[in-house]
Length: 339
Image 1 (cartoon, rainbow, N blue to C red):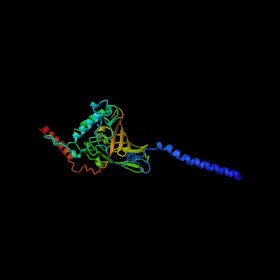
Image 2 (image 1 turned 135 degrees about the vertical axis):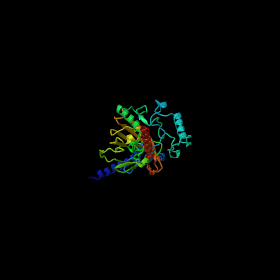
Image 3 (image 1 turned 60 degrees about the vertical axis):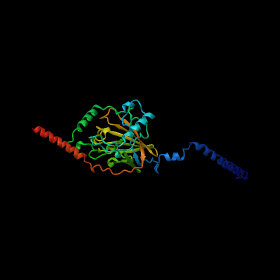
Image 4 (image 1 turned 90 degrees about the vertical axis):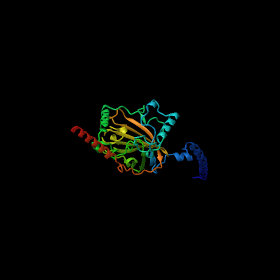
């Protein structure tokens, strides 16, 4: 190779290097506006992630809300509360939280210390938790569903034995633990744990822990009180699919699901919207009971509260009192018939 050619190659190399140095800052400046916000507020509210990249759903979440399950008739046709509607609803909820003395002759119920102190439709202005059907109401029952409702109404009139009582009365399951998780008057906390192959949902009510595999394994075949759950990720949303419910499981416990049977198919969706909010959605499908599937959407808020043991049986005299009352009625009937 000649000296003239070597000199020419050196000059070209220097020119290429200078052009590259000049281009890099320009490229960097061009890309900067498309970057995600990096303000302190944005970093604080951004949904946290686990080291592997999945959204971090862990922590204790409060799902109490004043949003009614079904849309009240006076709000028919409205999907969202106006400022006036919201103020009225929150004022009414705050009034209900006042611990008043029971009326004369009324033994009263739980005092307000034990009731969830919320007067907020947290995270939503929805007029109902039900978002589908669009009218915010549960769909119509099938003929079989109507027959089941009549049978349940009749069953509530008798207490021949503990088997006639719901799993909640028998301290087997919590009335709001689910699945699905439906707000109740108290104990509206759920704690979420995550690992590489599973998610655990620990409900405050009856301290029910639902272990949900997320490793792709198939559903089991044994009917269970809370069904058989399997989880998967769809983007940043945890989707939990549950089947194989017992006929006397959730359907005999949860007021909103009474009458459901082993045909119940439940799909839940958990999405962490920001540091303090977990969006919870679910769809219920049981063709035995309802003429169509129906869906709910609600928000949970991050809580610093701790979950303590729910000692359901401790000091619980309801069951013996209910059954002794039935025995007394039976004795009274026998005495009357023997006269």
